[in-house]
Image (cartoon, rainbow, N blue to C red):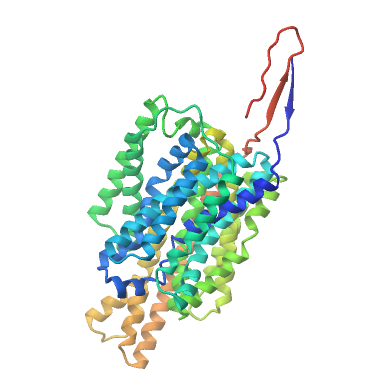
Length: 529
């Protein structure tokens, strides 16, 4: 018997056009994370939400999306990834229409929750379909690079598009822009994107779905709330409770014949290491974003729209990094490239340690562009490794695990780096405040940079300048220590990549044609590796 290896089929024009169509929902889902930034004053004026309701308008989308990613990834593997994508697009479009014309806070919160459900179906479905459409490793790497660039670009574009729309239309317009794109998706996806499902699955496990939601949601909620308001017994209990439910989820996966998440994936070389590296990259890129945003608006005094426009510069500067990294990975060991990406990010954070209230805007933008470029390089390469390590029939779950690690890494970054910066700010500003300020005024200035600037508005010009300068210096001191903390995490990421990912390559979807050479009529038409 002679075994010959047939190269993986290469994608043609139809697949690349299909990829372009798949980027539409991904762009909109990532934009919806940040599109509300400028709309809050308009929503508050019309719907008059309480402070708690306003927080839920912001947060419910991300919480539902993060909690349902694994469930929807597994569901797509069972019922078909294209079918789930179309169901999610329908739900996302309908929820966008409901949000645009919401006449009460409760309606808007409910619409944002349904948007989160739709987003949880769209994100893993698009990435899993990319895995099935692009069998050639080189083409798949390029496609995943485009996927990564679209995801990160959407988060940056959201506030800018929101600001532009709100200049000319009412606040509901930020949701209506989703509807034409979803209609286009419903029309074109059945024509351009093939269906794929895993034929070897049992019944969908509703108990595991509930456990995954009960594990992820409390952990991410507790971490994000601690990042915003500090430690409290309720937030700690939320995280502990989520971890306990997570242990029950893992036990159930080990004991079922057809688990929602096949734990054997984590025994595949490079799978767990890639998820860990992805988490560390998201820790830095999301956790540090709050510092650059606040520096633009509060230290440099830019308007929200101008700050959003300037924040696009790093995204535009690194737009070609992911595809370039995929091309380099054909010649250079991926573990070394990922380590180099973390090293580039370290250089960016070093630049940011030189930022002061008096430094020009370009220095901040250079530092942000460099660290973002390094981390986008890391994220695109590890996403390719995760999908390559998983069998094609489990690409939906693998995609969902990748995105869940991103959500968890981002939440940890906001909590830890935000806490580091806040602690330095509160300690440093005390020495810079003028003597004689009332206790309540001093306390407000010590709480946040925004609080200090609000205090300065009510003071005489000379005292106001002193408070603003002290707050700006304290904030940038906190930014510096957060940058050093991020550097340490980047070095940990580089070491993790070199130890866990050296020699790991994404699998090619090659076909093995078996030709019988003896009298026995034994043949194997194709085997996917």
